[in-house]
Length: 242
Image 1 (spheres, rainbow, N blue to C red):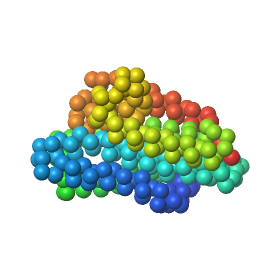
Image 2: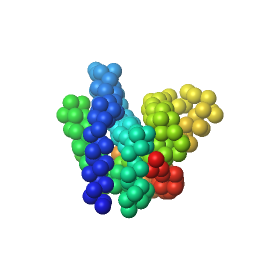
Image 3: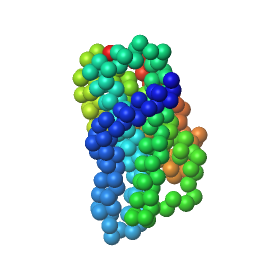
């Protein structure tokens, strides 16, 4: 049953390739734009690519979770395809967990390709990294955003509204990621709100893992772990086969 569900999710993965390609292309676009802006400033150039790497990868993870997995699920709800699964032994937890497993390969391939381009084209230094901590955090963020996406895809009664909400959440988070660098210039109340959103904790935690600043020296790890458990529980609770 597990292998069958993984195959099902892989079929959903290739059903709308343009949406997935668009989402995964965004980090590459931002990478080259950053390189273009910083060209001619060697120190700032290297520093900018290094600092913005967690932002680029977070966008890629969100694209896979929101624009592929969750959007495809909402579409399956809309066309009533999931009603067939309700007649099988498949449980919501099995559906969601196999969805995560089926996309781990995509995360690995994309991350490897992104690092190769960043290293060969932009000279990103990959040595001296804590790859265990980085991989753990990247997979943790993937799980959290996957649970979040599935919650949004299911929590609304109308599947079409869920698709619209996924667009709002995805592009809203991208906007917030791009204003993190100027966060100190925003009004205090706006800054506090952004700093307490899951996307801010995600970028900050991945930054700590990427720069090997110590995962246990701050509270971000425990907040993200807590959010992952909360979103995971809610995504199963509100799961809909129709």
